[in-house]
Image 1 (cartoon, one colour):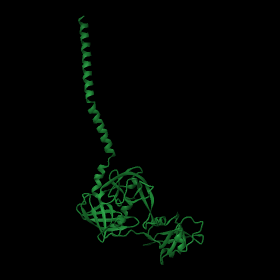
Image 2 (cartoon, helix red, strand yellow):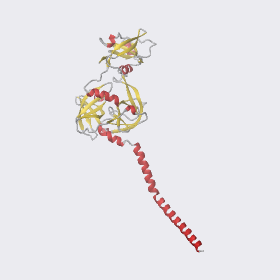
Image 3 (spheres, one colour):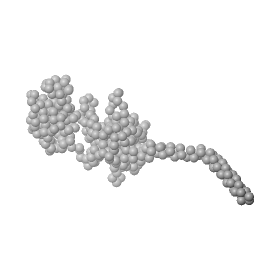
Image 4 (tube, helix red, strand yellow):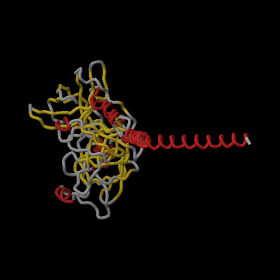
Length: 363
């Protein structure tokens, strides 16, 4: 009997302990749910914030990006962006677009902190749209890290740092996507017809007047391109373009050495065959069955073209095996070659197709 009473007491105590521990446990869980939930939410939010933020990358590059102010006869003629891509001793090298400093006789740089320093023009080149400046200011301490555009993938996050609309908005950051690679974009230097094709990176990151010459950067803050062009049409938005950094550096190295970028010379004046009015003015008739090519307006004396018997009125339709449809495409294909290279030119004369060899010269 005593044994049964002991068992009953043990069972009762166990039940009471279970009840008390369950009640206390429930109370602790209930009272701590808000704080636990808060911490979980905070950690998730922080993780998402960190993954989506480029703030650290912006901090890496912002002091290397400058506003480029160009002057002629003490009158400001243009504003753009540049970045320090190299330092040699106390000399900082700044890259920008050629069209930003073209015709300038003085250049000043405005830094992230608002201070202004002097810069010297080393050189620039029209077709590459790359220019190099130097400065010995001690304030230029940050050099941008060089990336590799060939390793970038369409869909990668990219961003720019620049001065759209001038000094007031210096340090503006815009973020977007690498929308395309190896795009051929027609460039006009005269403001009318297309003069040249450039192979560029395409992005939907906002690029506005004043961003020219600034860096296009990957998510790690490495420069993969130099902002150069914006496709400006009322019906098109979100199409900006940048020169791949590898091409830009090749041109910059030539300019740093005090050399000019050598382009092959053939010695002809040209028109697109679609420019009917100007062809008529110059007495040139294009056969009805010819739908692409460039018309020869003039041939310079002593030029490679004259040596190859190319004449006014000829219609060039091929360089080697590549079809030619415009003056811009002709230059793009021609500039793949070097002086002293020999190329085949296919042309139409009097309705018949001819091919001649042309040995290119230096400009």
